Length: 422
Image 1 (cartoon, rainbow, N blue to C red):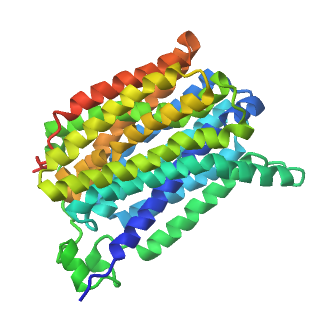
Image 2 (image 1 turned 90 degrees about the vertical axis):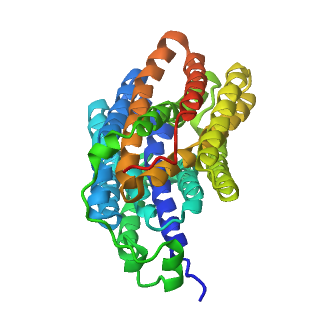
Image 3 (image 1 turned 180 degrees about the horizontal axis):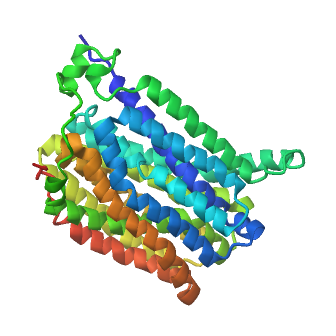
């Protein structure tokens, strides 16, 4: 009997969730210049708004991961996606900086659970030699969502402007209503189709259950927080992810604004310029995760597959950033930044495969610790970037990303993916 492929449908639904996650947060990044003008919000205040979202996102990673490990990914992911989708829609009602800040904080609370719970959702469905690719393709989905957002936003905005005379709250706000509705629909599909283990899913056959590792039920054991926090390698992984996430958010939150301020790219022309590095990141996600699994399959050496493949990505990203900064044309700058972002994203599927390698049934909580520390870097980037730009210009912020790539590569040399949580 040939195995069914329900695990691939589960993976596809998870990829869709990652896409929605990044599309919802990328709307504000792309529309920021228009929102700044309409609501009268300064660049520094926009930094505080982004900081509010990132801080809430970072602080609620661990509660989000616990929620998935305790109640199962089926229920937990349904709840958090519905929550943040509602606040995505409510962003359209913002009327000033304070209202935008409050809405973004509650939006961040919901999105915080997304990646840890999604990681938990795959822990019982993916083979060990599929984990790097699975994490690569899910993060590729998130970056593809971010890359498509400028194009989709333009369509929503045109539609909104056409109806703004009839419905005053349309215009750019239509995008927030539309993306919020997409998330609610996904939640309904997920709850209907997904099950926490292959054994609970009526469509899997015995061959697929045996292939994955049959006979297992969802664990109700308490999360071993003491063992997790005592795992020294996890903290090295978390600090490495701090460096990665700082750099990621420089690109995702501020690259469109950088293009507008430095290279004078208007919102009307922003689509392709902002799309290119993010799409390069999609390719990096797929390539890095696949290559890491390929090395693991060929050698059986998990540290060779995870550690050295990731180090190569950080080194290339740090080096490519320098000519991107020095380029005098927007085309040259975007081309090198695309290489840098490809190489940065080459590392992310590997980073998220490691919590699966070491965490097992508690991968959600393990990844939550990593992502919590990582997103403190994302939150910090909002304040550091805006103040560095104000004092020293945009180049200083991107030089810092190059330095952080070097630090991340050095930290990865200390990460042992074969050392499991007891």
